[in-house]
Image (cartoon, rainbow, N blue to C red; front, side):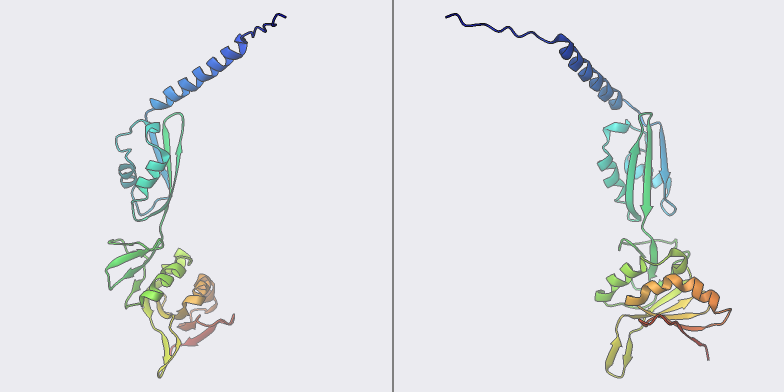
Length: 233
């Protein structure tokens, strides 16, 4: 009995479609490989200059846009200590868009002569406008918490603080609250606040308006919702 031979026909239309698709993909990759950076757009920066970001990113001389990976550009820019987060966008027409989020300056540490940022980095800086000064030593166990809690406070409120002093509440030999701080405000008022209630500072502007020009000491170190205020004697 003869075996029946089945002839398979090549489906040329399908093969041509595959080759055409591969050819288009190759053209796209070839095009991207030779796209030069024509324009750089930077957003979100105020303390770090465009020039520093461009230079650090490796795009000072406007190289081929897609030959440097987004991951590589991001890691380079994040070496700038004031930068907290980076997002990179590239266009087919040669535009590189760099979106940055800067770390918030929290206070100047007088002991170390460093500006402390919300990302817990400490840098040398002469730009201290609107930044309070930490005037004394804070134990290491509380220092990190101080940075973390201040990072949640509105920058407009932080700019109203002139000095931060670590001032634990102690009566005789009994420690009542080791997390308490004394704040001297630029408006002449003073504030007692502890780490657990630091978020109350976000309402300081509203509280100040309710004082109607009176000056004294504001107590925000209590778990009570009631605000305590005493006039200077």
